[in-house]
Structures are given as C-alpha cells and as structure tokens.
Amino acid sequence: MIKDQLALSFLEFRLLVIIHKKKALTGRDIAAVYKKKMKRKVSYGSLYTSLRRLTADGFVSNTRPAKNSKDSRIRVFSLTKTGRVIVRQTRNHFTSLAKFKV
Image (cartoon, rainbow, N blue to C red; front, top):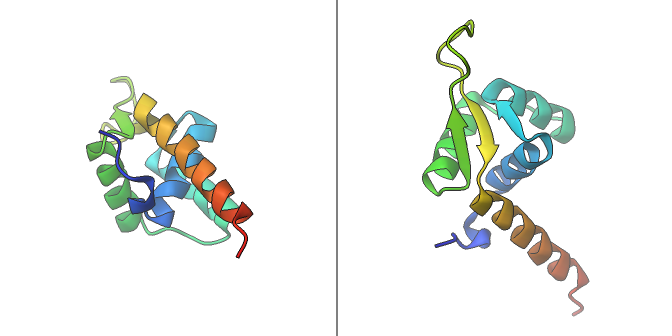
C-alpha cells in the first residue's frame, strides 16, 4: 500500500527528490546536496530519522558499499519503485494545487 503523499513531511519529500535525481547517494552526499539546493543545513539527526522512516515505508532502500570501503557504516540510499511513484504523485499533486483557482 502506498502511503498518502500528503503525510510526507517537506524534508521527506525533498530527500526523495534529491535521491531520485542523483539515483544513489550516501547520507553525507544527500546532506551536501540538500544544503546546496535549500541554502541551509539539515541536521544529521533529522536526515537519518527521515531516511529510516522512508526506508520503513518502502520508498527508499539502502545498501552497504563493497567490503573494501573505508568505513563499513556507510550506506548508499536509492529509491524503490514505490518511491519513484510517490515522487511522481506528489509532484502532480503540488502542480494541481498550484493551478487551483479560488
């Protein structure tokens, strides 16, 4: 079942979009892109809490890099098929809201 896209926080949606555009990123890479695009930092606590939630909801998957990596704690995050659907649906939803006339 796909989570209602309105239940996504702004941070979660931005993280999904960042991962969607870059395909696969580490947490630190995601934080760097977020800072560059949003002109503000995201705390690692908020970042990893959101990534855990997105993983639990089935929107993001994470893998460890090869064993020869410098740090075995590093994880690489990428969107699942469901995550790509959610990004598309949420974008469509925001587009329709922008066209709404009062």
